[in-house]
Image (cartoon, rainbow, N blue to C red; front, top):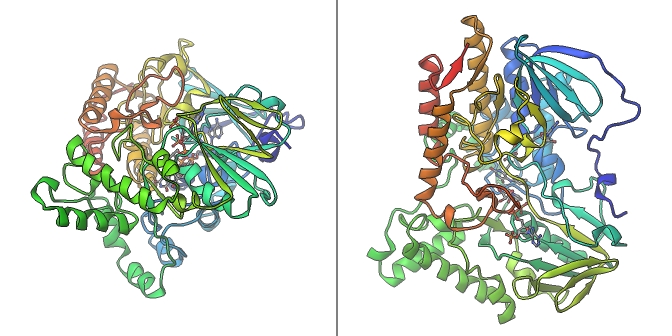
Length: 550
Ligand code: FAD
Ligand code: NAP
């Protein structure tokens, strides 16, 4: 089997599906990941007529599609869960500090059953197009099953990391082995025993699957283009007494989280490395390295934005890598030297660096010897040929706006969203874009989205959108879109804040630079969760200032 799509129960237009009826709704939610699931719950409580359409055959989103070996959350389970129901908090038990993909999927399935949300969900149905009818003030939405929807509002909960970056290597179509993408992994078990496996990509997804695949593969070759900063996750089971304590203080804990910059329990260093002697610096760095969840880049108060302070952390992580990885050449390849720590998404791992000490693991450093093509039986780099039975692509995503612009969405003048955002996505607060009325985004560009706790953001965004729709209805208004000048100013602010950080110093999916032709621009609001909530609430209390309502 060498076509991954045949493995994945994602929707493709099916011959049997010929439903051309038009369903009329208040709201169509697109996507049934964390964001879409909460949106269904929220809008149902509000009394809106609503359906959620999902391309996959079940809920889960990221946690449905990315079921590769070792897939696991890198935010602690107590933080990476819904806050909307105290009962849910009390009855659910997270087994581990960082939940594995199966546990998170099980949680989402439990939520959907517990709140009876499935009856408002349509699976195996991909939204392909949406047209705004200006006269009727409604969206006409088309799907690949030919079922159509006419609705007053569309809420795109399609995910910031859900549009895969597909492999486009020369020769792939002639590869005789099996190949998979981490972002669309088969739900059936894949056996690596006795197989020569290659993994291309060493971001968070690659880092998680590499150690697990190495345990059973005959041989694993890791094709690394850019080395990343990682550190041990130090995952563990959650002891019952810790759970009991957490249960008792969940409401206060969640309230505290919402006061923090990213709505997560992740304290940053408060000391300057330049005011500490060497032993004290080392103590701080060791404490951050050993904690698992604390960001190395935040070890010192200046290290997230000051290159000299950051370099002290970089040097420490390099030393750690060299001390773990026995082959000095491989260790050097694994030491990131072309970007500051924290300028790309920080990774945490279980035995990642240790895996390179295994006799059945080889590192192919693509900076020294790039991939030329895929051959029928392996991968050819400029200088070598690696015979392989299985190739796993862990290439990442067309992030933040890819899932929205891949849908053919057109406004009243026939302009597509993809055309409108070709130079740069434009929204106010990430919620609405100019000239596309009643098209809401959950965690869209300009929102804190992937920089903050995504589960908290899902709830915050859907609540804001729900309140906005209620306000429009109460005030006899039928349409809302972002005011163009306000949106331009907002996205400029988003950019200006990012320019003061080290994010702009690296090529990454945060900057859009992982996708050819995508404008290089930081698209998430870094001003902090509390300030975002304040600004968005203020707009609402001012009758949605910054938006055009009619
Ligand atoms: P998604 O979960 O991506 O759901 C979007 C859904 O929309 C998908 O099911 C998709 O099939 C569907 N869809 C898209 N387009 C269409 C269409 N046209 N028609 C119909 N359906 C459509 N964040 C963290 O904070 N901590 C983590 O540890 C973490 N780990 C991650 C691990 C992986 C492997 C990935 C990829 C992301 C991770 N993230 C993590 C970020 C993650 O994106 C969010 O945490 C969160 O799960 C996003 O939920 P969502 O509902 O917004 O989007
Ligand atoms: P990613 O971070 O974008 O990494 C993609 C990797 O593929 C990079 O190493 C990249 O190298 C490489 N790559 C891309 N195209 C290539 C090519 N043509 N040739 C060779 N190498 C190529 O993607 P990801 O690992 O899927 O992670 C994306 C995000 O999802 C994460 O940052 C995180 O937010 C989330 N995530 C979280 C977890 C978790 O720990 N819970 C797990 C997985 C994902 P270059 O950098 O050189 O382009």
